[in-house]
Image (cartoon, rainbow, N blue to C red):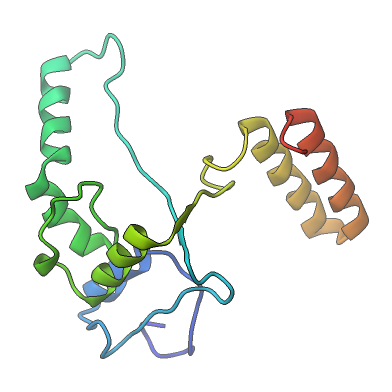
Length: 160
């Protein structure tokens, strides 16, 4: 897309950083829309950092975590990456049109977790899903895929 060789592509917020890095401008050189049929939904993916028990540099790690969680760090990082702040007190004026669109959606739309990012299903189901799709890519057997997914859902307690 950056080279102008295609009309559109399905991407996540990470693509924004690539556009910015290429010196492209929101609503001038590129735009965005929700995926068809997803109006009223915001796919939520949250990244997090933790302090491991017994970490060798606990003080340094806590300092780093404080910085990363600060308003200043989030206001500096997120405009470059394309993501929105985890904090709700960040200054919206420091963000462009895409970010403000995303912040509005996050505030008003249904938050939807994803299986692929580990927030919408148990880990054993996620692994079985990945395995079943890998097999499907090779054999193209829709019935076998459906059966494998139904069995995985049942085994993980994920089905109703």
